[in-house]
Length: 131
Image 1: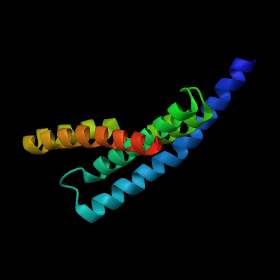
Image 2: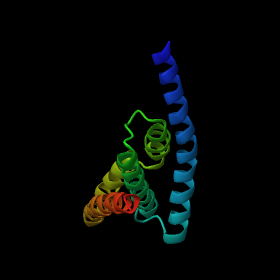
Image 3: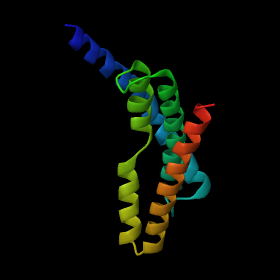
């Protein structure tokens, strides 16, 4: 019975985090798109980079406190919230749309920006969370 209860609590924490992450992703991406425009997927890029900073912070917190991927904090924040806030599937679809629309340089630029900025953001977040 203990394993079932542990799984149920984990599922509830992931769901709670996702319930907050999904609408925030929608809001951030739309505000950025409205302010900057939609010819380039800036909204998704901002969401993914900011999510990577947050993932770095939670990664550093987990490392500092010896938390595993099974911990309540990790399930709520990393798996639930950040799992629903960031979006690789949107990144992939938008990259394909740029490439299919004849914007091969834009697609390549988006790939490079996403990888470089997201890796840098995780490192920055981890460094900031390790202070």
